[in-house]
Structures are given as C-alpha cells and as structure tokens.
Length: 258
Image (cartoon, rainbow, N blue to C red; front, side, top):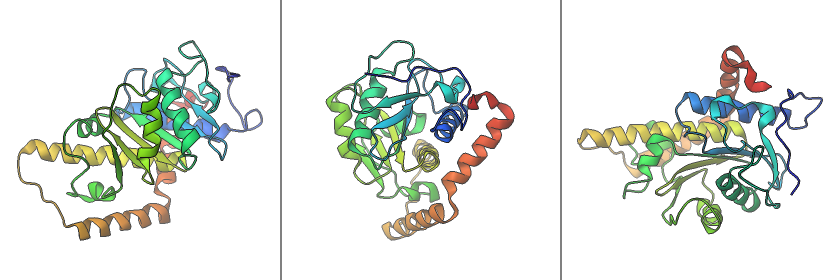
C-alpha cells in the first residue's frame, strides 16, 4: 500500500489539509500520558479524516504517547493493508482494530483505545457494566457495550467482531482487554474516555471498601444520564475540554504541534 511516512517537518494549515486534526489528536495523546492512561508504547488513537472512514490518522508503531508530535501521525487507508512493524509503520494491532472500526463503523470518526487501569479492572471481573452510584457512573447508565468474546489479541476476527459489538454506544468495554471510546469528534471521544475512566475508578474503589453500595434506582440513573447528554451537547463539554488541554500543552509542551 502507499503509506504516509513520518514527516518531521512542522505541520501548518498551508501544507497539510488535516492540520487541526493532527494537532488535536496529538494533544489528547499527550494528555493521556499525563493522566497515566497509556501503556508502554502500545495503545492507539485514530481519527478518520474522510467521511466514509477510509482515510484515518493514527499514532505510529513503537512511539510513546508523551513524545508524539502532530507531524508524526500516520495517514492510512482503512481498505489497504500496510506493511507493519517497521519504522514509520502502524502497530499490527492498531491496524487491525482501528482499520476495522473505520471500515465498518464510519460514524465512529474518532477511535480511542487504551488499557487504562480502572476500566481494565472492570473489564476483568465477572460483573459487567457500572452500577449507578455517582454522577459519573450514571452518565454511562445503559450506555456501555460489553464485548465478552475475548479470543486473543486484537487481530483478525477479534477486530472485526468489536465493530459489531459496539452498536450505537460510544463506550465499548473490551472484556479481558481494555476500553474503547468513539465519537464524531476527537474532543467528544476523549471526554467520554476521561469520564469513563473516572467513573470506573470511583466504582472499583467503592467495591474495594467492602461496604454496601449506594445504588440509585434505574429511573434516577436514566434521568441523570439524559441530563448528562443534554449538558455535554449544550455546552460543548468535549470541545471545551480539548481546548483547555491545548492551552496547557501550548504553555508546557508546545512541541506537540510540530
């Protein structure tokens, strides 16, 4: 396949039609490292720059989230299998999972996959989903898809199955694996990922106390989830969060834009 090689030249609106997308994706990669939601040089974030999901940006093989720059993101074709494992190439699991998501679920413009601590703990216990015990857990009430068919690392059939399991939800809890957040924009997807990890942290910590949980009724949980939907949409929470992430990085790690 033809693949966009890593280009260490700074990106600019004049030289790259995906300038803003590159910067936004690099920003959330950097912030994920700050929040300890990364894992070694694994895990991957992608964003489709075409409406059909065919063309997408993704972080390259073997690079740490905290060092990635906008110009280093790869531009791939979801329908054209690349050579993997070489410098400037995608990780094979990134190609499999993200390529399948962008081919089969074009509504998932942004796909963020991590093995963050608390979501992965939740993915590793028998109980599926989050009990509605606080505002953050209620945000995801009946809004999390669960994949319970783990059959090895995210390659081949495993990757294809995940795209059908997601359904209409924005969060996929990947049993025995991790979590995936999707969204129509990078800001929305990252906001969901952030809040889901916080919700999992609260829930797992509450379980660790051994005390009875203060679980609200389904009616209250659904009411709160709907209020969250309205709140997030009305004020543009995800875009506001992403904007502030960029402000922080502009001040402290400006090289993410290069």
